Image (cartoon, rainbow, N blue to C red):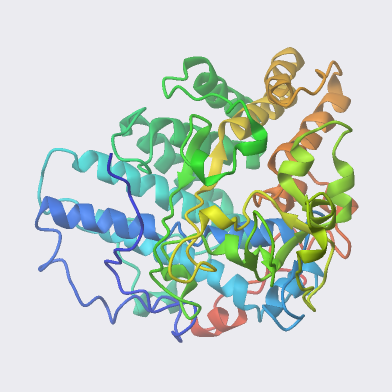
Length: 490
């Protein structure tokens, strides 16, 4: 079976670390429509170029955990990815490299998708509708990221985004962006198949799950319950919970029936530290691994995104997800036959004693040649347990507690936890707690706390009315001719 591995960049990626304009994606494109989009192969190559831009999922994983009560930034020192430390402390402002990367990465993905739509009438061939549906899904995904990070943003569809347009591209109200996201996902859903022959291609189930998430984030609970309930009841994708949670995140289980929307990686290098978004491997894994570790099972890394004691203590007694999610390194070492022979270093960026056990480097899962950058572990953007919990929340908020308990307790039964029998607000909080138990370490916690109005209670330094969204990178405001106002409080 063929697999989609990101590595073919149709539009030169001169961004994130080296460019001085918002969207420096080739000087107005070196390969224009007259020389491209004339064959089926051109469209195939172009859509892989869009898939490429989902690879920087490590940004969502880091920020979604570090901005919350789940993790600290870690690393070599507080100057090692300073932007992450500022996000951890809720002191981030308009000068933040990680947030600038978020904006650039997602707009580059949108630009690549739009370039396909701009040239969609060039030729006809069997399967073009699938390519367009995939492009719509990914454009929706990129815009969803942008609106959740930054709120109102320029909305440009079906045409390339050129440098000259930016100064005139006003920020679009997020409600209008959400309308476009829903439209793209709805149209993609009608075309995408339930199953695919190439691992990594998007499916109808992925589009339905993504649409349900988008609706949930807007508090459109009844609509979310409808689409997620249909996905669960119909389930032509054959989704199910993987039986052994403790091994779910091993590379040997990188493509299982729990995967609904998964970003694929390989053990090949591709880029380097100068261009993390160019990598073929999952950069998060090496960065989150144990600094200078010398011992069994695990491998050394850079000690980023370290789970907190608060997260470790949050799990219920007997919940196997705690150990599967949070590696208590000293306890692990103490349990080994020769603990005195195992060594590791503590980074100056903070230390909790815990590591992200879902996305961590293991000795038998390393890529080549630089295994800090070449982990083949896929990133699960939406898995079946998430679908069930989103459905539980949507049903509960739509006054259907019975169905909400049904979906919630499916997730708890997988890890042998007792069923929840509560109703009303207690049930709602149980569902939100379950999201933390089930999904911690995967990059969703901050956004869950924000959308449910609980961020100020849970995150130290969080200021209501400000920190729900992140600041627009100041350099991008300047490059846009100053027509964008900074987000409130920044």
